[in-house]
Image (cartoon, rainbow, N blue to C red; front, side, top):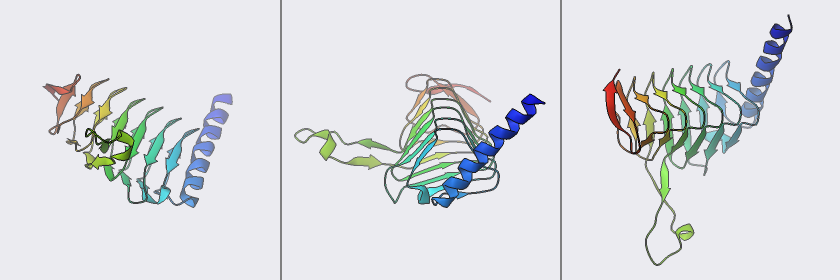
Length: 179
């Protein structure tokens, strides 16, 4: 009985946060669940599909008003995941993103003779297909496309395209198998 009450309270809390995000301008489909201490910047650029779940401490960091984040249905974000979006990040349906994953679509320019903080960024969209699993602590860098059914190992740094149904791991990530 107590467990049922706790689960019900948690669900109501998640859905209440989702309702508050939609009031602020995020476009959320039915039954989105948002954990405690989740953050979003520029909510008008966020679209979350049906039954997307964000565990506690997820940060959807859109860095400007032109940034877009699209997430398909039944996608799960583990605790402490951060998406840093300047242009566009698209994530398919049925994707599992483990805790502490970092996904970014941009990097700072680094020419000599001018301080880095005055050089702006170079942005390239990131696309993650359907039925993808990204392991704990992985980093997905700008311009990367991860194909449908791919698996990214824990702690991997992905800086190039990952074909459908391949398993990649390591720093930098490379193909280690097929699903």
